[in-house]
Every structure is written in C-alpha cells, then in structure tokens.
Length: 357
Image (cartoon, rainbow, N blue to C red; front, side, top):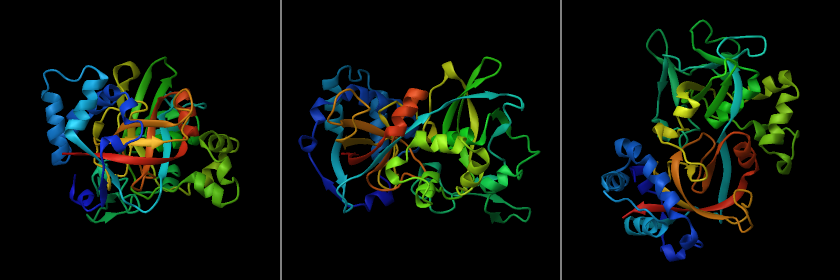
C-alpha cells in the first residue's frame, strides 16, 4: 500500500462477512493474480511485492479451489473503503477486433499513431487514472520548457504529420476512437496477418466522456446510452462525429505488441489481462495487482442465471474515466461477444479490497 492509499479510511472485515465468498472459483482468481506477479514484483508496494515473491517462489502452487482460497485467506485481510455511498459503478471494457491496412488506401485512411519522441510522462502510468483531471503528459519545446501536448483536434488536423508515426491505417475515425478508449485492439490486416496493438501513452489532456456529452446535449437520455448506441450514432454521420469526438481532447498512442497468436492483452505496466477477472481501478484506493472482491447483484449477463456476480478480481489496469473508491472497469475479453458484454455492463457494485497482512 503506497502513501496515498494508507491515508484512505478502511473498514476491516472478515472473509465470512463477504456474501458468496465461499462459492467463488478461487483457483481462477489465483491464476489471474499469479500472472501479474512478475510485473508487480518490479514496481508494486512492499506488501504486494512480498506476496508476489512468495507466489513466484512457490514450489507447489495451489492446484485446486480450496488451496487457492486458503492462499488468499492466509495472506490477506478484506477491507472496504469508507466513502459515504452505498455502492459504486462497474462498467466493462474489451479488446476490439478491427480491419486495417499497413498502407494508406481509399478504404483505410485513418492512421494509428505510435508514441512521439517528445511526449513526456508527468506522472507514472499506474497513476494516470487517479490523476486524470490534471495534465499527465506533456512535450518539451525548443526552449526546453514543458508545454501541453497537441489536442485530439490538432492531431487530427495534422500536428504530427511527417514524423513517420503511422503504425497502420483503419477505416474511419470512430473505430480509432473506440480503440483508444479501450486501450488496445486486434487488427486484421489486408495481407491476411493480424497484429495486437496496445496502449503506449497519451497526450495528457483530461478525458471527456463523449457519451456523457451527448446525454447533456439532449441527444440521448441516460437510460438509452450504451456502447452500441454510441457507436451507431457516431458512424451514421462521420462529419458530425468528428466534431463530437473533438470535445474529448485526450488522444492515445499505440505500439505493436506482436502477432495475435503470440501475445495476449496487457494492462498497465505490462500486466497480462484475464477476461472477467481483471479489473481497472482507481490507484488512489487500490494498488496494481491487489485482489478486489466485487459484489454486483444485478449483473446477470456476465454469467448464466440470475443473482449477479460475487467474484474475486485483480486490479490489473487503470483508466482515465475510472475514479472513485468503488469505480471499476471489468475486462470482458476480445472480439464482438466481449464487446457486447462490455457495452451492457453499467451496474451498481461494492468493492472489498484484500490488503496484505
């Protein structure tokens, strides 16, 4: 737990106090936790580093649900952040699959840009979500002074042309925007190959929700807004969409991780993501790699049946829109089915952070 997290007031609980705890698949949670251990060992807080070292040094890791449950109960204490509200909000994100080209063509003309050399981090990547309301990245001018990086509109209008930053090209700016919001993408190229692109920095301007902007403008009511509705509205008129997208000055850059079959989606600091176990959180309240037990009693579309989900997740990612003690973004996987699940996820939730003993 870092200095800022140690200032957060938490209620200490018992595992018996967590509804549904005994029924979860703790082995699946352990596997997601163990996958992130190498990355957390390099940069995590002391308590998490100790647990991750034990995971990596274990000669016989848990091999069944009961043993995995004992691992978590022996090494962690469940807590809940006191924040004055009965619940928070859980949304979903995913890795979209898009078509693209290595060369600019009439069908694929929107560039996906790599990180510019003059882009400078003002905060650690793990903190960019918690500090999203301030400038997180900047550029250094000819005189050596730091200045704001170009906005989305300025980049779209050519501020970075002639730098050779183009990784590949997509069909339209809406597809690029959605990939930037999700933070990664699987690109099926015209030559038959496929590449996985992942986040590699942003321009540092605060994130503005386009969906919220359209609700406040009277285009949608709150109950109508979801991922699919937003996508359809934007794609219906690309000229209209351009002006709306520019209200969000934030812009994300990418790098090629590798071929689809040789890689897997990554979260912050290169942490491997596990569908329906990886969670983006506000690192002002939870450390990367920290297990977080969630209860979302109305979230029924993620699993078969009713009654919502009660599941141990792991904090593997951050996001500019993910701010608050019980604000989370659930990684739903890759492709259209995962996108449908993510788009439907907007549910009340309670978080119980597991703190190392």
